[in-house]
Length: 242
Ligand code: GLP
Image 1: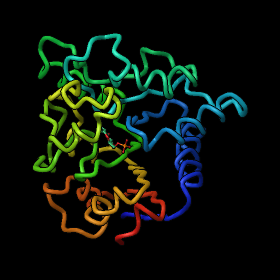
Image 2: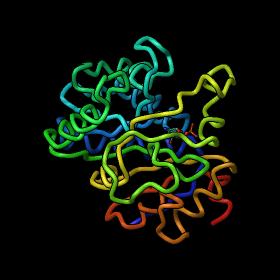
Image 3: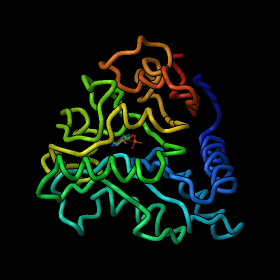
């Protein structure tokens, strides 16, 4: 079942943080799926606030990143492992060895993907997966054409995604890595609750296809229509084509 909520952006961040908090209070060892990009930033701010002011604890939780660039140096600020540390993990005192991601610096990338899938399985699966959506309808880095059953693997980024993400790389598209590792659509769909946030009119077409389009690999996020528990949090701009 897919529920769609349309509300101002601050309210969306609170709703997503509520879902995370409810889960952690009921199950302190929960596995949380973590997204990068601008969309979850306000959620991470709210979780950090609740950690500091209300004692919300991540001490026993596991974190699983959605995706990672291939080949960015270990200390590169846009390496998603570093982004996740700076935006959420360090701010909530999350033990580093409990936050897992596919290793974009591994010599054997397929083995790194398999190891990441195994880590998710060992944790008993992801309880709640936070998601953003690309303007071409990708979730994680599952670009158009991704198999709906795909698992964590190497992908090439589309030109559009590299252009969208150039803003994090001095506005220079050539600095955006051409390859990534990403949880597959099948991996993402195995999470027990999907929570997607989208804001702004530039997301309206992707959101329209996600909610109202046919389920199709051409708009990868549409796979969420098949999920038993998906929450789609939208501001007015992102919802403007519904
Ligand atoms: C990147 C990430 C996705 C994210 C998307 C949207 O490509 N790999 O996980 O959902 O961007 O980003 P933003 O939230 O900044 O619009």
